[in-house]
Length: 238
Ligand SMILES: NC(=O)c1ccc[n+]([C@@H]2O[C@H](COP(=O)([O-])OP(=O)(O)OC[C@H]3O[C@@H](n4cnc5c(N)ncnc54)[C@H](OP(=O)(O)O)[C@@H]3O)[C@@H](O)[C@H]2O)c1
Image 1 (cartoon, rainbow, N blue to C red):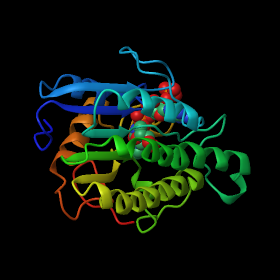
Image 2 (cartoon, rainbow, N blue to C red; image 1 turned 180 degrees about the vertical axis):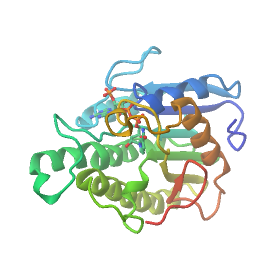
Image 3 (cartoon, rainbow, N blue to C red; image 1 turned 30 degrees about the vertical axis):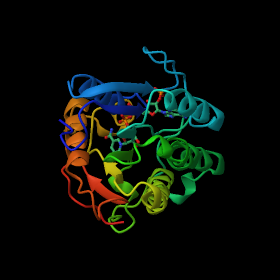
Image 4 (cartoon, rainbow, N blue to C red; image 1 turned 180 degrees about the horizontal axis):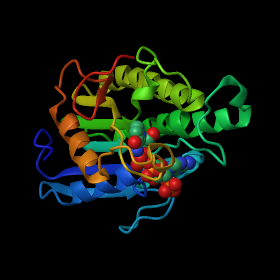
């Protein structure tokens, strides 16, 4: 696993309390070539990691400062996100739009991960291959939007994709070996998806974690940074 990263690589997963985030942590901790996996979530981690909240930029800065002392990272995955905010499900029609809920969606799905990239990009190993991913969603694709609905979630993931792409251009100037990617994990059984998938087929978080790590591992060193990929490695239109 993660054969493209140096032996003894160090990894960080944010959103480790989530279904996919937790499975990513487990998969990486099972990899003998991985020397450390830090797991951040809204609760303190089992290895002394501080709690973070995407709505609290100072908590992200403090976590980055704490991790900096442990050496550079080769893999950072932001697996946070929200579809149902408060008591509201995703909007079906324009009449459902609510300014406060929309702002919350952007805070969690776009601004929070952007602040994660801001705080953690310079912990990426500067002269080795390093991978940084945010979990996006296919429904954040503007070109692929044929069904409509889910206004805030779609728009906040589209904004996330733009933020990731823009950051990739900047990060490349100082870390030419770093590859940044927005990933769609597929339909995965989780707290987030439970209210909407019902009996529909969904991947297990363990399968999703394996798929996502394989996609990241296979991203070429040149020309891939700033991409939007699905769990099977296919490119998703912006
Ligand atoms: N499951 C799917 O079918 C599917 C499909 C497409 C895309 N995705 C994307 O995949 C990612 C992971 O989703 P999942 O299915 O694993 O959902 P999940 O089990 O609900 O996990 C969501 C994670 O986000 C964290 N989070 C939410 N708000 C946060 C905040 N303000 N600060 C810090 N952490 C926060 C949660 O923390 P708490 O535990 O503290 O709430 C949890 O760790 C999301 O970006 C989602 O949009 C999922």
